[in-house]
Image (tube, rainbow, N blue to C red; front, side, top):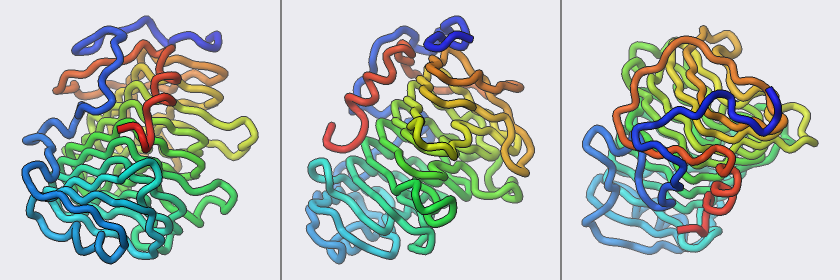
Length: 322
């Protein structure tokens, strides 16, 4: 297929059309299951140290915690339920450790810059979800580097152990090997089947070598209007999106640039899953692999004209935009 053309005839979505959605509104799976409001209605606190942060985010009472500064750390910051965690400016966040959202519900994380979390520090992820429900991750910047090899770092954003009703929107995930995992193990189907429903929209995956995302069991996982880019100088690139272990992933209206293998319908030793791909825009990229069918999407959403996704995402994703 010629570069710079859609993979298929444009297909209408529940709300249809090329209109650009707002960069501040919640869309996707986090609107389901009762919705996601985070700390709305609770007090707001601004913290300027790691000690203050770890204390402020504890517990399940409604609260908004604003981070002012970037804190160096080596253990996860464990976030309680009914919490909004938001950075001040473009550079507030964490270096060396990540945010852990475990066994809680109704959490919003926005405008944080999290970088260089070694695999041995906490869960080894910039943001880690473990049995977390109703979570919105928005306008964050997550990164490490690609010079340390495959296993020095773990994930940037991993969603595991039956987590559900998650929206990942307007984030920048970049310069990393294993970027985003949905479902941690082929043997965890009893916990994960019927869960792991995630929406990824308007994110920039820039030189993320693999797992953008790699999905096990979740159906449907919805990946729309994201920008994928691989730096030509990085030669170890593997793939964009993978569906395994019977998962179902709808991949629509995305912009792939320099991505030889945009989608995989299996990965490694994992059994295959289903991918439906439509209306994606390919620039110097391969043809997406597709197989099977995917469960229906229950919420309203709007897909950008795919040729404009790159400009829209680069202009509006990441920190310092909200």
